Image 1 (cartoon, rainbow, N blue to C red):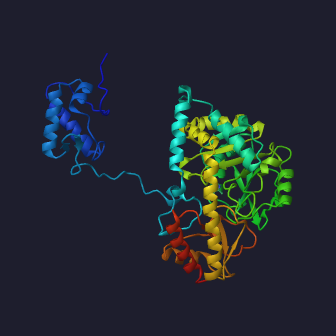
Image 2: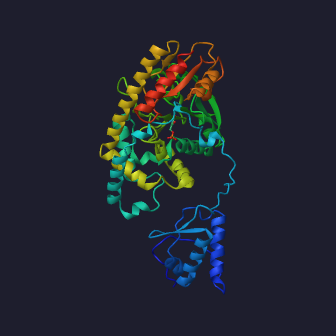
Image 3: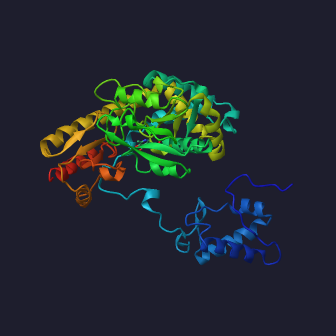
Length: 470
Ligand SMILES: Cc1ncc(COP(=O)(O)O)c(C=O)c1O
């Protein structure tokens, strides 16, 4: 059996072992650098281990390296090894056409006040590292294998207990599926509904701009559901072929309204007889003026698919979310998950389970809640003083606030002018609007995105200057 060197890095090099092998190796390495397969700065394996891997004499490899260093393709750094030199490395274009902003997100602005992201500088790095260390020390080897598509039992158990305690969710770990955030949750649910013969789904309007697309990509039709100051107009839910309704009951996105008890009851009644309510509880832990209203799911666990996410409480980059499902949907959605990406990444799942179990997640939520509550309060006071013609609306909750503009204000022109002054905001129109009368003009301000108090203060100041001009 061939013996492989253990030290060094792997390098796939097709080498002809006949006469002229050294020159062949040189040509192969030149091609790899020229073509970009070995980018500048790549450390090559030591000549001894590369020789062992390729079945060549060590001197053959060492001589080839020496020649390529002399030609400027490689660079020998004393005591560190041999690297691909900057000078000759390919800077070939990737060949990928520029990706549209709807795929990779909009560009940078000096003050980013578009909603969506928490203050990622609050991510509890030390606690996460410690939780990961503890989780890996405790996990059996088998945890790192293929597993239940619903996710690790440690995390499903921890989340079930947390959601019951904090959000009033009726959460059986067997009904819980860990997924790649709210995006994947909606995709899996939509596919499941479509596969069961559903034709259409009601989606709040306004809503997350990409939400209708997530749904229609699975072949379902979207029926826009209007929203007013009491939340979604669940009293208007209807349509013989509408199989589900996607709602943000605790804090309508982006208007900030709380779904009233009467509208909750209307939604639950509508869902009788096999229809589904999908509750997006994206920021349910962040209510500032009182204890949060419990999840809608707690009223009718057999009619509501509850969706939660770590994207606001920890970081969107974790791509961790969870679904709590009525019993009849657990199998079909787990199957969709299985064929989508097998299961959520295990080490992150175990770390989150550990963070929740040790109380670190609660501490993080309480800490972040205080930061956002202060930001929102400061924003309301600053706008009252410096931009008296605009009105923040919605419940004191979450990470974004809708700000009403005087009637007749041109939202789009204001957003453009704000951008010229370095402030990125969203016009309400960017979130869609369900037919009927045009809503009063408004912008949506995400106050969590600026990282750290200084960036926030500067962004608030710039925002007041922009809105003070209307
Ligand atoms: C209304 C709403 N739901 C859910 C999410 C979170 O999505 P995800 O969990 O896919 O990051 C967001 C993020 O911006 C949101 O605004």
